[in-house]
Image (tube, rainbow, N blue to C red; front, side, top):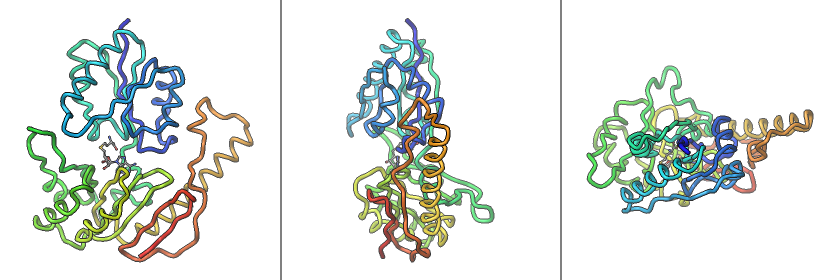
Length: 304
Ligand code: SAH
């Protein structure tokens, strides 16, 4: 047997933000190697597959990566459809290249299925356009994080050059990030949004300006978090946050109505299920430096 390894994007967390192609492949998969953060509801789609978590521990990255590469190649020798399921998009800070080059050099067929990367989901949650006309014509996806022995990241230059920036894996170093950017000329009053658990019902959004980044980052609760930076995240962002909640509610109602009318759910109940965010309160936009979060109750709360 010589199977294909599919590097599949699971999206940012919400099960209904996975692509139809990804869902079809999961349904066909014989074996799925998945990141630790991929939600159970998505794994349930892979109903006939053996599921193996392949989280990497800090500090043991390269040996863990080689072990995963080898397991993927071995699985392809035994199975027709091998899925390597990664959070967000596999090609954005997903170590896709290591796996692709290992598999190709071992004559294993590889295909990549894109996913919704966290920056797009977070901006969607805020109802903010990353490339808002008149304000932003460029976007940078960056991380200061590099592996042992790898060359330094030029993330600062990229953030300075772009109108909008999404900083991945940055909250642990928030103070250093803010200091480095300000020292390099980024104005301390640049609007930012710190978005934790984008796309999920426990999403938390903290808004402010660059010089407040350390204190905002300190208020996150340990979930995956993105730092968004740029004028597009200015005054309208929080209003957008509330608008987004209305949008989610509207979509959930429409899906429910459609399913009731046609009585034809798809094969993937996890995808059909509307998001847990079901209600919000009508408010005017909350002030700058505020929190706008969707709690398990499904309600937005805002606090100074
Ligand atoms: N391939 C992934 C990124 C992997 S790096 C993607 O395309 O999204 C992991 C980092 O992504 C996290 O540290 C965090 O910065 C960001 N991230 C992933 N999921 C997120 C989410 N739901 N909300 C906010 N940030 C997220």
